Amino acid sequence: MTLPLSWKPAAPIAPATRPMRRPGSLTARLAKNGAVTVDVRTSGWGHARADEAAALRLPRPGLRVYVREVVVRKDGQPAVLARSITTIAGIRGPWHGLRKLGRQPLATLLWSDPRIRRGPFEFTRLPLGSRPPARRSCFWRHGEPLVVMEAFVDLPWPDVGWLPRRRRWLAH
Image 1 (cartoon, rainbow, N blue to C red):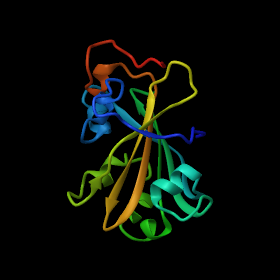
Image 2: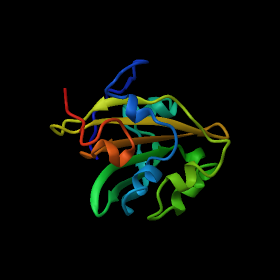
Image 3: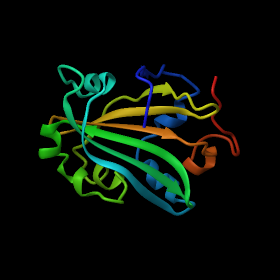
Image 4: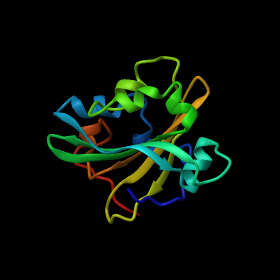
């Protein structure tokens, strides 16, 4: 998944990102009115890009990290492209369950432990035409980070529980 490297915190009242800042499991919201499946694109060792190294608080880009990329499908159609990354210490420690998820959604891991904390959302636009912005946030467990990036694929608002019916994200 090739993504831009420029992530920006959301303005407090940014209408374009407000719906994407809802708490809880996106997968659970998708599953409320349709079948959700997860296709794993990759799961294993990779290297941190500059933006990822900064988010993980690594000293420099290119360091070894654990990467899991998936396509979340709703009723068979791609809905979310997601990339999750953690450090070597993270995958060997509190995020070791990431290796064993297989086709289970990441929500299985993230929302099972009330001690996991989510940092603020950041947003960017993808160069995919009229697609929505992508979001990312960093989850913390026992002092170790897990950065989760999600790019939404033309989902109507009701499918994720957001704002008026039939409204879609549009690139500005």
